[in-house]
Length: 329
Image 1: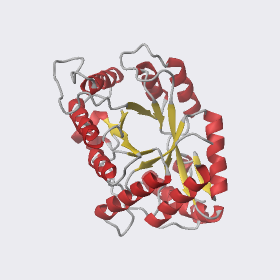
Image 2: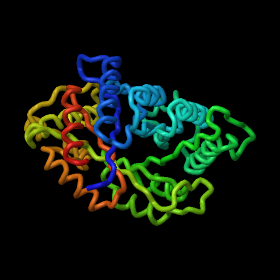
Image 3: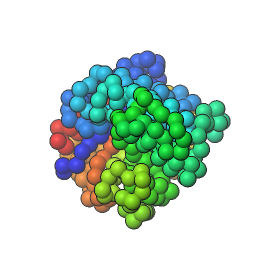
């Protein structure tokens, strides 16, 4: 399988660890991913979440770009309703000026948090037309003139950087926006598996190169997949209970940092609703994980995969990254 492999990092915080330690472990993983041949490393914006330290994506991207030399680093994504588009353009334009042509800007319409926190963060509209206009203005600020399309405001920090923009989505709505804007689409299939086929169909059917925002000549999709690779299937299944417990906590209204792995059998009696959200996964030995990923690519026809790996012990995550790279590349 020759399609590129990427990493989505939410900078998870394990029980007994601090945000400082989680960020340090994330940067070690960034160095490793750069060494192993992964194409992209993206950070996802989340707020008011005790087990994730990925709130300030631009800062994490800058640090990761500083400790790596080849891999593309970006957002997966910036939740645009939380931000003024001009500020996003200036931040990511500055990143491109600092680190060269290695910066990606993935944009999402969800707040990445609960309603109360979203109200505290809100700076722009999540309505589809307003979201599309914000992307159009962002591209103007990244253009050679550095000018927004709807106002005469100029951004010297982002002018000429041409930072590539992706649209993130988990439903047909996000897919439709990406297609109509002529932009690459990143599908959040790792936690929203129910509309995968419909979203891909809508994106490919609505894709146009006629939109002023269009950046590519044909549809281009990256899809998320949960991954845990270990020496054996049994070991990988046990380590995967870390994220299964996290999703069960969400369903049950609990707020905990990442918990240690448990015997998978102990979770069998739990409500399986949120665990089913994780069914797009490749968990097992290197051979098992590779086969499952290839089957997913064959079924969906996506152009890139972005992997999501939670581990209580950072060394387990790094081992998974190594084993997968050895099997895939």
